[in-house]
Length: 322
Image 1 (cartoon, one colour):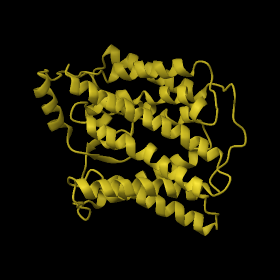
Image 2 (cartoon, helix red, strand yellow; image 1 turned 180 degrees about the horizontal axis):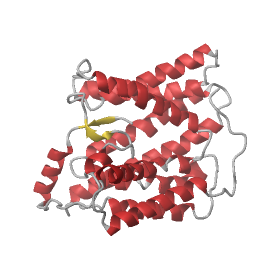
Image 3 (cartoon, helix red, strand yellow; image 1 turned 60 degrees about the vertical axis):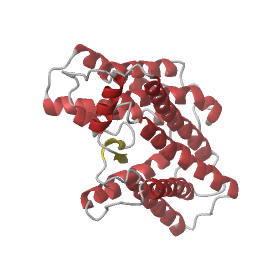
Image 4 (spheres, one colour; image 1 turned 120 degrees about the vertical axis):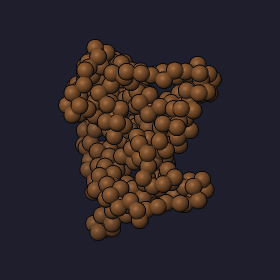
């Protein structure tokens, strides 16, 4: 959804020079550009930002707009303002779900490439399956949920194999991305629990709180690290994308919180790169290696199992945005 990172060419060049590693040749991926344009995770980590050097500009604007829309909806419906406890909880959700993964990914971007981060982020459903019974609503999926998540991870590694220089800093960078995926999963688990327990205020107000905390965090980060050099006027097309695609995606994410489990929510980290790879195959019709075919099958099987398998303890009384 949100794109803010410099070109990966220079980052990878630095990584290869430092590690003495040969660059890959003859990649059997359908297209790296197509995968990079996918929504496997926020677009801030997908391709170069049109906001000049302002990595935090697009997400700050996106979440700010989402906060305004959600607050306007809640105000128009005369919804009750959440309690102080809920205000703190949802502001924390915004940081955990939206901000922390971004920061950790940016820390690692010089050592872990775009496609490698996509593979690592496929761990998010696995974290969600393990942690949701303890951090979420107590929801327990079917017994095969963890196996399905691991199958999907294996598929992602077939398509996006890790190829890192054997130096300590690269290992630390991989750990940072793993923590980013864990943060996204934990944020989903906690947000789903809060959405189900939201009895003292509108979920729209909660969405506004989460989005506004993320917007303020990104704006502050941009102000301190980028001197707020956001060349917005020259990027009308990007602003249109933020308004028509990214901002509604944030609101849709919050609306889905009380509707489905966190484990199912995190399957977007599997489905988005999978669909993008399939789109690249359709558009470019390249020669496809056997490991790519195997990866597609494994990712599809794992994601579909997580989405469609029956639940052992299904939650009742789903709520929507009030």
